Amino acid sequence: MSNPRHTLPELARFNQHFAERIVPLWQGPGWNADMALPYEALDAERKPLPVQRYRAMACARQLYLFSSRIGLPGAAERAAALFRSLQKHFHDPEHGGWFYSIDAQGKPLDRRKDLYTHAFIVFACAHYWGKVRESLVESTLNAALDIIDRQFARDDGLYEASLGEDWADLGSGPLQNPQMHLAEAFLQVLAVREDEHTRQSLLQLCDALQAHFIEPAHGLMLEKPRGAVDNWFEPGHQFEWFYLLHTSPLLRDTPLHASIERAFGYAEQYGVKGTAVLATLDVEGRVLDATQRIWAQAEYLRALALRPGNEAKLQAQLQAMEHQFLHPGGWYECRDGEGTVSRHDMPSTTPYHLATCLEGTMWHTAEGKSSC
Image 1: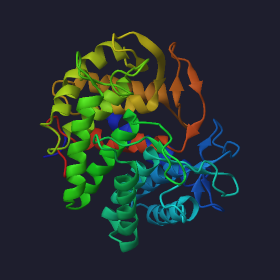
Image 2: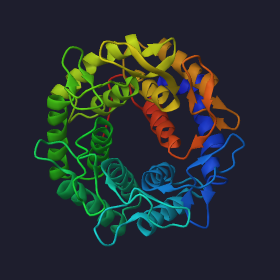
Image 3: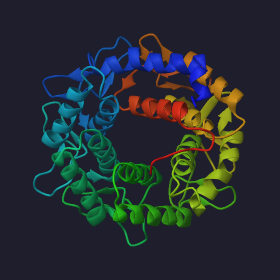
Image 4: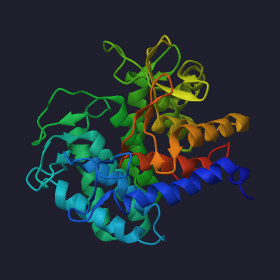
């Protein structure tokens, strides 16, 4: 049976805009052919901003983007080039792992090793390997998983956010966002192969997050461990977590899923004004930053697609995406609390959010389905 959401004209236009206006930016002006890397961002005239750095995370997100479109003209070749560049430019041959960034000439810039980057390398390589089944891709995936397990893992089930070039402890402790993307990466691994160690690592991570990051009154996922000074929550991350947990049969009955299910209404009540998803709030629901970011709008959209009885709200959010964030040249990254466009650049990392949003919104039923 076809999904009725495919008949929504707003969704069809969003998908068409993504395919015809956004993806081509990263096949043309957003691609540095000499470096075989995406530029970090394009300006409002679709020209590359002056190069200050290239990040491994951005390369990995673009690898996901093009591997998800294999079968379309040029996508397989671009994905292969991005995979090679990930290894060529960012891999640390001395200490292992991947540098955070390189400079305009391709030399290591920020040599630290951060969990966020390594999580996206796992995520992208797992997705890419699922498409091409090449041994070199799987060996890179396995190396990244091993590094995360050996270097970032803590005794409490969480993972350090950042380590030195030689894996020295920087005292960063765990932070929410890298843990979430590691969970997403583990889910992607399980989507393409049986992997009992990854399965157990994922369950252990979710238990640790429930124990250390969930605010008990409302079930909110905090950005820093519970008890940290000046903590906050981001509605966009509540919605992102909801999607990841709800679409996984492995995680859907966990205490963490129950918490995030409970937090959804609170995040909507205080963190969504009209159709605008606000950036950050304190646990009492007071707005700390009213910026509206396209990625948070995208996460709210695909979360709504999983909740029954939300067709009108889903349609309203699709209209808001179309009219507030998409434009003929691409997209607006941010609007301020008054709704005025506050960023005109288009980062190379954003299409990942739009691609996962479209996939989730178009294909998941209200009950949620996943191969994980």
